[in-house]
Length: 449
Ligand code: PGA
Ligand code: ZN
Image (cartoon, helix red, strand yellow):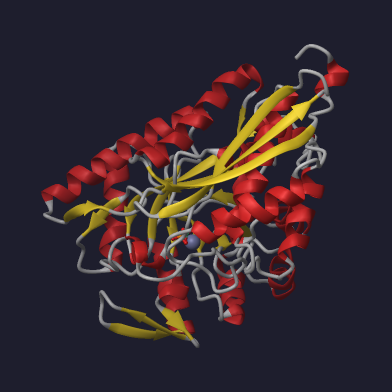
């Protein structure tokens, strides 16, 4: 599209369509297509498509994912959400100017009319919100990340490839609760590029698998592609991870550091936490003490949901204790919600927000959360869900919005690799202009090995 005045007008929404497709757990999910038309006589047509993911360890305050209930597919069918897109949503959006994402999302929010998307379903609204952004980017003749950087994002900085957080062992709700902790991940602060961070992680992942096979501790592959570990304690997973980093030839903490998602809301509430694997129950302060001990003994750079979503004061005490040297991430605590980020920041709880668009149901609300986080001095991580698909929209969000970190699961399974590979393509396309976020995005000192 060489004519720049034409390129600035993406046209109007001509057609909105949804269908049921299947996610990485073999469960139904919503795919939407938004078609734009530009010009009256022989209009140019552009299409955007997106699929929504689904979580397993969800925060209580997430926007509602509408499921049909009943006996079919365990009650998880999405025919009602699909019907909402093909009916009400399509009628409301057709004819709208395609370039204004904020207006499209505002229309979706208004149409739903509930605080939590519980009428139309966040799976219906997000599929359309993302597909509209994809279509507008196509009409502008730009990749989505670039379109976002010029639109909602406008970070006014050179585009950066994110620092990836990559799962090595899966646990918690993603591996039959075989270990209590949900994600044992790595990040590569010492890598010089996104491509190199993936190369290093490939070696760590491979060595972790070999090591577990040697120990008879390999029980399969968890929901997000990490090894399903048969360990006797949570700490055994930590020491195995350090060993895998060393066997892969890297310096723990300096080149490759550990990232944990405790997902504590899954095994605790009301200030009591039950570690099933170890058969013990801890108070909030007991769990804090255990995590601080781990932070001293292991090269941990980042901890997500160290305490439950109903334990804000303990979350703040933990942040106070380690926040200067460890990234403390709110997922279930913040559910990508701008108001919850502001409230947490007021109490000094967490210093980083996890951004999952389906926790809110539109791109604009997710973007607003990221703005609130930036204003509070938080770092950010764009994240996939445990139920994913080949959709790679979140990679563009991480880069276009300048978020700096990306978490999409492990280094295996197509739905995960599709996203890492999409980021690799963008790094290559940006060429010399590509900058890698590296350790600087953590905004704090990394622990020593
Ligand atoms: P979920 O887990 O997608 O199953 O909610 C991911 C996470 O807790 O970060
Ligand atoms: Zn989480």
